[in-house]
Length: 81
Image (cartoon, helix red, strand yellow):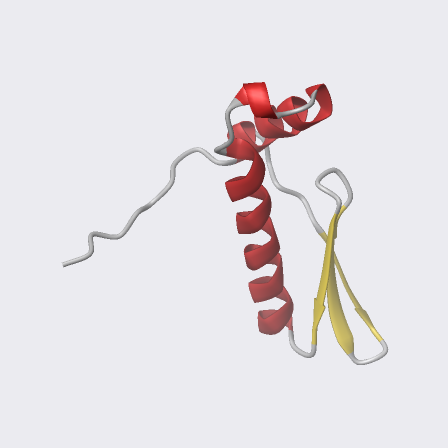
């Protein structure tokens, strides 16, 4: 499993979270807002690449998919009652 390291900074009244390897940069007025934006962006990346069939992906996208699978160990799906 890979570690998901991010750069967190505060600039001009906004918190910025960046992960260069995944090409994600988000910001928010609070750290919580920036973290929520990062979670949203990471989830979208995961949904669009990690869950896609390899036949529909370029070689770069397959490498990204592999990296995402190394970062995410398990997925929790709540039981809808």
